[in-house]
Image 1: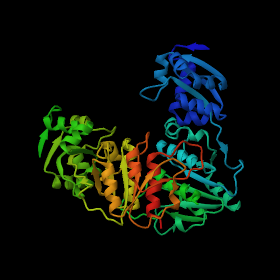
Image 2: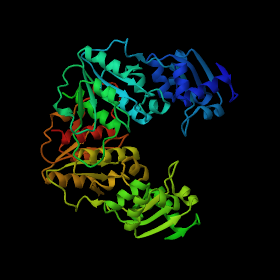
Image 3: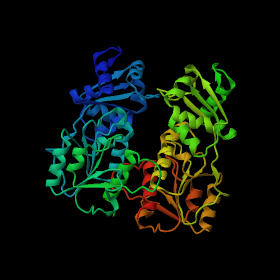
Image 4: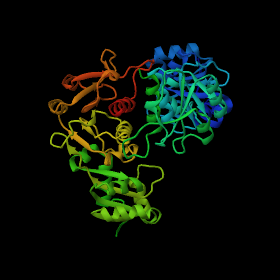
Length: 262
Length: 262
């Protein structure tokens, strides 16, 4: 395995750029992963690992993870502790990092189950919310996640918060939310726009037995008015309390739960 | 208003100690708040504000919040920008801080509604989980939160994550979880121990029409075996997916939702 020692090595510089910039992630179609478990999970779940970076210590300490990662990686490099510190976003780096290919499926061309249950994120910004939603979506076993607008599901913080679930559950990305909603409506699916507006239909009154897509909007501004109009129904989670609204990932959790609740 | 300028002023040093140490919070019975809205919320909700610290800029920029805080505070001080930087835990401090009295009610002596809905946190460690649970509890309108074991609900990060809801919803603290559960059982309340163990009763099969107390355990270890045995039932959230378990605050959100769901 080739050993990289210079912190300004081009491969290290480009990995840092992918880690830090949503623009670079979008343009390169790559994303950055940190951590033994997360990188091994990616490798095992068919994610294309373009480059793996591992310290000598990590090769020893996390040998079973490291083997899987190296076996699946197109290129693997041993790195110094100093480079590991530069690549790491965490206080106690494990010394394992990967640069992977973002292969989110195109929502308009991918096969969507007309009787499936999906969550649809429009402009959700907070990486910890993105991560929490994909963790809940996987745990409760829905069929996939649509991401539209500025949802950066490959943000390193989102991936860590998701415990890697975004790499295991189908993620479908789209450019135009309204077009996608209209297509899902045509398939006979029930598209639901969630809103804190208490005049909307209570989610407990909605028949969710068929295919359902629940849309969650931006933390501050909610769902865009165009997307809101394109959805078949506006729904709300009845709130008895005094807080202004539920956190976006909590609202998503309750919607996902209602979709799968027997 | 007296002006403090020395960073090593005793009042500033003790505020920092309360902010940073759970031990100091417990022993002094005080907690630390940062932010215009959060401090004003506390003042308006009957929290005893022992000391308020405000920068000249904050007095001007957040004048309506500042007025409420100063009116309710036992002591109020103008502080320099430098001290504000020292007191702040955030990147862009608003320059408003309070030292408040933690008046969590004693769970064994406080009045608990026998037909109410409560969440019970045992050894929940992560401040963002503590904050998220109290935000959800308030939004969905349950009757209160029990905190047992090491739950530090007055941690500054927990209070920020809760958007101050922990200051508005009744919080009951207890030393001995088992004794408390036994008392709640005697009142005729249904005490539920949540577990990822799929052999437990599904929460959707439980009659939650009367008084219910749902217990959430530590993120890594779950509910202690003593508390588990003291509860009337073990319940689980059916999971269809592959993730190991739901995040503690997501599991709490689904339990709270099931308690209030019509």
